[in-house]
Length: 460
Image (cartoon, rainbow, N blue to C red; front, side, top):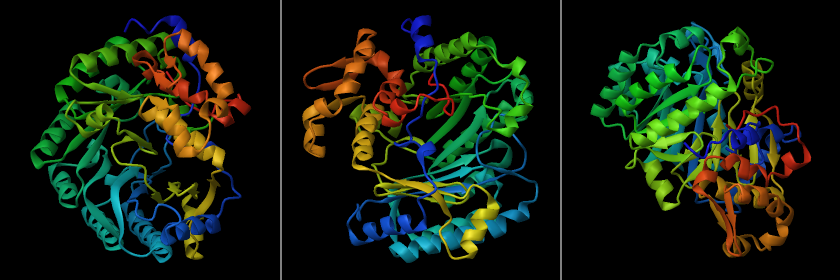
């Protein structure tokens, strides 16, 4: 890709947020408690918030049978499947606390089971979980109901069960098909297994199949990753999520098992990214934004075309902005003008529920400035443009004055061809869309005040 000059890449080879929220989760404070969340729930119930907005649900299943060395997720490594049953009971208690506050039967248009490994649960446990959720909430027709799947934990029968339970989207964790790379990250799964499962999912009628890939893993080279790209294009999933591996062993203990000397150098990572973009777009995929690619007929690509993209804690979405209930250990929720995060350890999560409390340990009540900047940043991240007049009318501000310092900072990005500024508004260029996180970072008040960005992954 000719625009990926070494100068441009070196400029943007810096850590930065993924903007699945604004403010970002590292800004949450412990002063935010259950009382603040209950107040936000009451506001929604009374109609002071967005009472008629459908809900989104995220359920965190933390268990994994084996450790993947690259993983930065909150997980519990265990082969003791009996640990799942009591966890489901606590999830039920947590849901009951929400329905007590909001009422039963709230409409849900989006559900995501993440982990960990959601398919760690047995067939009966998956049925129990979905029965409980459907008893407590009203699942809307045409919603987006997805589950993360470790190919090593499912077969055709389990896929059929997921379909029967109402899931219409699957996300398979592949990362890389190369056996040496799989060995280096402690995740062995033959390509034939994934191909078979995807073929079965298509026959069953799942609306969309996503494949997760990671570049920058140990033992990867641009040439080895090229072979994975060929296989992925043969597999032809509806969506592809291509993530850069962020090596932060000081923060994530499992990554200490990775041999640093086996990690590809920065130039090789950039080559993998560039060649991936070329390979996927040559195969007919649409570059949705950041890490996401989709076939032209997939709902995500259609939403991008029509300017209807949204963004939440799971990444880009076709579903409109809505309140999110995060269930389970470490899960993050959004309710009205607040964010909240559950306890990160099982002990704390269980203890709070045993005392009849929502297991919230931190969060944030957004200021008016936060809300304005969230709307602005999400417009950049999702639509790639902001019209001054429309934004002024929506927020009763003069955006040119409000963001005057930030807009002046964009002059260098405009010189590089990443953005276009006019009297009408801000437009991210096709080239700039590749660096959209860098554009959004200019408007992040917290980053402007705090230049220590090492807690984030790099934006390239």
